[in-house]
Amino acid sequence: MSAFDRILERARATPRRVVLPESDDERVLRAAAEVVASGIARPLLIGDGKSVHGALDTLGLPVDGIDVVDPATLDADGTSARQAAWLARRHEKRGMTIEKARTALDDRVTRACVMVSTGAADGCVAGAVTATADVVRGAVRHVGAEVAGGLVSSCFLMLLDAHHPIEDAVVIGDCALIIDPDEAQLAAIAGATGDTAERLAGLVPEVAMLSFSTAGSARHAAVTKVARATELARERHPGRRIVGEVQLDAAVMPAILARKAPDQATDRPCNVLVFPNLDAGNIGYKLMERFGGARAIGPILQGLARPVNDLSRGCSAEDIVGIIAVTAAQVRDPTTA
Image 1 (cartoon, rainbow, N blue to C red):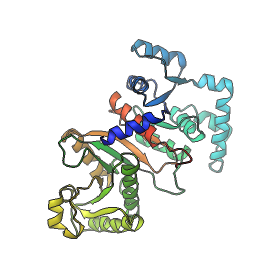
Image 2: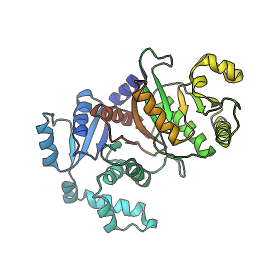
Image 3: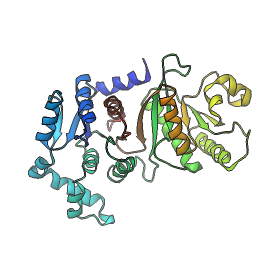
Image 4: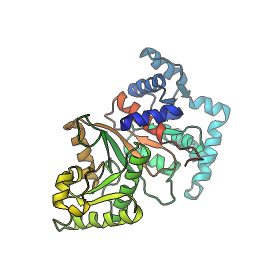
């Protein structure tokens, strides 16, 4: 079973309520219909009920199984008032009032994040038409970090061709969020990305801390940062294999690592790749996708109390289905959290 098949299996085992605030986008509507048909999730579309149902009908998509969260209905039944009161309490120290909270709920991403945080939805997917910064801001403010003061970062699940030597998938981070992580942040990204590989994709994490140097072959402040981050990551995850600092070819080809850093070598290629900064990560995942033919699923946000995930604005309906499946699979029941 492939890594993505394991994700689909987990999502289907307990269909979760995933809220989609961008119901005006055709790709989102098509994805919602597909996840219902595939049994992956229960989509909740935020928008005017008549408009959403009309758009689904125009596209020839079924309405059954798709719930519409109409703000007008929420206003009428008192749900909006309760959400505004919750929002005001959560951000009282920042000067949030009931009036400001009511205005904030006019933003659909904000309302979606509030729904996740208050348990009205299990997860959220946005970003088809909303900038990543706005999605992440809403998630951090209204859902919050899993651990107080913890770092929220991102990763991509890269699905590889069947003939690829590194199984069928790698998980890579951070490719969308933390621009220039310091050594402590880089170590946190390594830990979170390894956890995602293990919990979500069912992989045994073999983590590579990527650099233009392998085991001290070059001297530079950028190399030192990755080397120190490697040490920190090892201290925090003593039972996990973490290779670094290491060049990409050595990370994924055991024979090369055996020549360059024999003390770190095994017969297993690394399946978790941690980039030193956002430039490298963003370029790297797009090279894998556009030149290497990998399918990119993400950005997957890491470190949040509940799952909220982003989309590239160039995403397809298939991409949205993939990230909805990931979001559903990320949900952890209180007894297993």
